[in-house]
Image 1: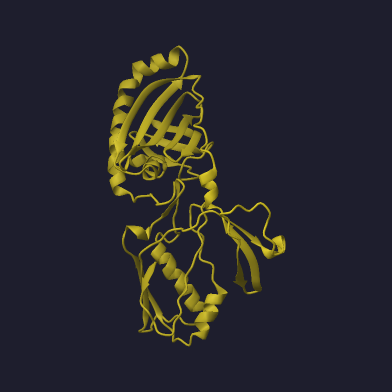
Image 2: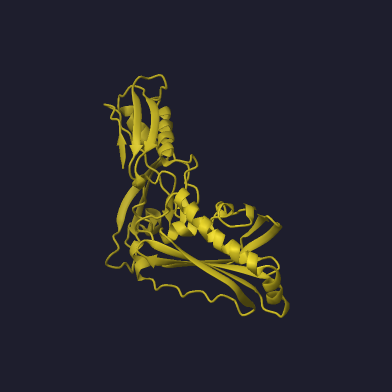
Length: 330
């Protein structure tokens, strides 16, 4: 929903498609039909003023999607729309920075109404409805206008499918060769997705985890199995890899293990009810005679203090970062 200044004779159409698997929103694709409408409008050139966002529903900085989030390259979806409109006006020769007629807008609501769908061109299905459609599936049709002509297609929403899938079993963590040395939990007044971002996003790690100065070689902002990162610690450097990851509607868990597989930290994030979520951190070391003994003698006391401080630091971080909760996304 965009509240905008209305310029008589000018048709403003700005749309963009967000892909749920990406971490950065795709660049706006110039729409030839939009440009043609602008050219045919008979409007005089205008200038594009600042676009802004207002209210929590604007989701100006990011949109949360199934435990991840999508951010605009411009850092703001309001700026994304501003640039998109400027691009189409310029293509239609209707952009004049010196014009006294200015177009501005306020982004009020920004979300993704439909997340799962199947789209197929007419050439593949030959205008026939595929066999096996269920009652809730609706076979729609439309066409994409391009500079080379129209591309007819059919589509149907698939959102109902996720409601019919059985929940995956909780993973069986490979702990047979490890022994738990520490475990600490804390509840936070936030949703499970926001807590996941705060605890799991490597870009935030140095802001809450004691002893971590910086995380480098980040190939994805959230944990992915097998992903390796370099942790710059107060005591030196270490390479950690994400050794497990599982997402459920009410529980998210992942683990980080050092390259030598001597030590693993398990993160378990759970819904705690009444808009609260709980994070549990557990530290495991290799199960042998020496490792647990050395840990208890040389590291346990300091690690206990660090874990408790880290969980407290996380509460401060949650007050500083935006919410990643997206209604309707589990």
